[in-house]
Every structure is written in structure tokens, then in C-alpha cells.
Length: 193
Image 1 (cartoon, helix red, strand yellow):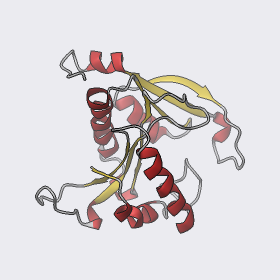
Image 2 (cartoon, one colour; image 1 turned 90 degrees about the horizontal axis):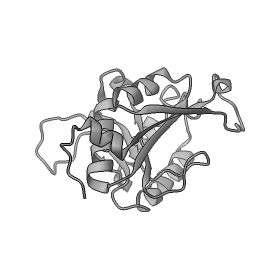
Image 3 (cartoon, one colour; image 1 turned 180 degrees about the horizontal axis):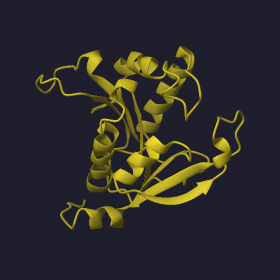
Image 4 (tube, helix red, strand yellow; image 1 turned 135 degrees about the vertical axis):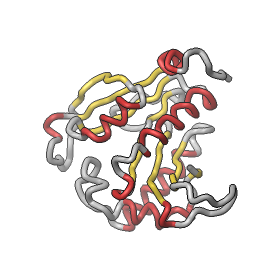
């Protein structure tokens, strides 16, 4: 994983051009201007709390450190910004875990692998008190990742939708991992700030 940078914009555009990738987010592909605006928002949000932000994930191609990965090794966008949505706490000690993978990378355990790395970073490096993750209740794949990495279900809620997606009547779900949960899972073998 490498920190999101302006040089990654075209990969974000390609990722968001697949309506299946965005099925539970927007229900459609996004236009280039929409992705450009989202990229700018991500870059700004990533600068809000030191150590939090967005990363582009690439499959290992055997090249040495510092070598730019080829575009065909692009796996997806991994997210750990400060929590920032209308149904989230406004607390700089809370991060929001997320992932968006290209379709060819689905069902390979890559979202779980990246999420575990981001949780280690969140608690072991940044020192967050809590990490949350949210998705539509019908998004079984994302919920499976959340459960696989040890997040626990917190609640189902029903946001006001301007343009409801299929399945939105079942609501959104929130999962969490607290610092204490992470320390317990790590068996005490953690380095704290």
C-alpha cells in the first residue's frame, strides 16, 4: 500500500468506472468530474489527522522498494480517514475503515489483509481509540470482511436517502473495534505510543 497521491487519480477514475464496484455506494459508475472532486476531498481529509488517510493497494510484483508498481497490479483504494460522515462521531481519535477493490481482486482475502494492516496502523502507530466501518446491511461481502478482521456489530441505522439504492430499506450497519479490543486480540503483544 502506498499513500494516495495526485498521480493515482487515473486509477481512481478506472476504479469508480465499474458500477459493480460502486453498487452499495452510489449504485452506478461515477463520472470523471465526480471522481476528481472525491479525490480532492480525500486528499484534504487525509491531511486532517496525522497518520490517517487513504492508500492505494497494489499486488506485489517482485520489484524492489521505491519502484513504482505497474498499473495492472492495482488492487484498490484502502481507507482509514478520520470519521467524518453525518452518522459518525466528530472525534479525531476515531477512524473509519474502508476498502474498494477492483473486481478482479474480489474474494481473494485482499480487503481483509489490508484491513488488518490498517487496524495495526490505527492502534499501534496512530494511537486511535476506536475504528468504525459502515456499509449497507445487504452488503454481505463487506460485512464479511468486517467480521473476519474482528470488528463487532454496533448498530443498524436508517439514514435519509436522496436517491435510495436497492436494499437501502434494510438500513446501514456500523461495526467497530476499540483500542481495548485490538489489544486483547493482539494478546498484549502490541507497542503503544
